[in-house]
Length: 175
Image 1 (tube, one colour):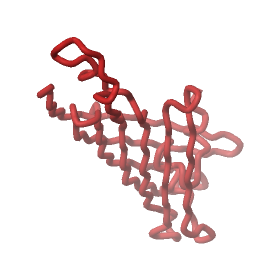
Image 2: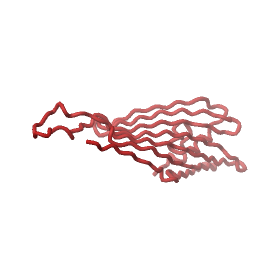
Image 3: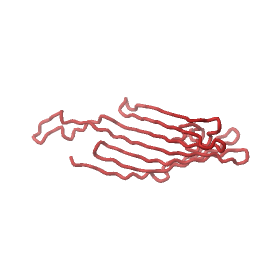
Image 4: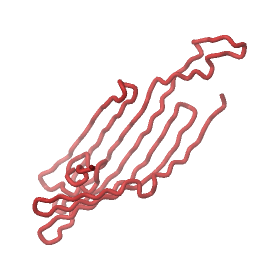
């Protein structure tokens, strides 16, 4: 599993394995990537947007910015459905969203070892979580990766969340 860790070499490397950005040579230019997916019959939406650009094509290095959103929208908030007098009032039902946002800044570079290529890279990420007006958090994390190519073999290593992606939550539970 995870074979893409060894083979990724395009704009998606910022997410899968930032070491893949080390394959950006002089023939590569600015790359853009976008995706929308709906899960569970459209209940959850996944959005992906990324941009990658070589910063030193001679050394095969690149920088990428990736933005991800995974959210569930239009969740009914029924906390005020039944009034203090016991009457059900559907006009009191409101909606909220629960979403996670991730922003990754990634760098990858190739390091030549004789006639073979070792690529290394890393991502710094900021994670924002929002649950309606009830709660939200800010977090941060770091990923590092490596790719090694030798003849017909490719190997990849990805250490995701090496900082455990710490999140600091705040809650507003007035109701």
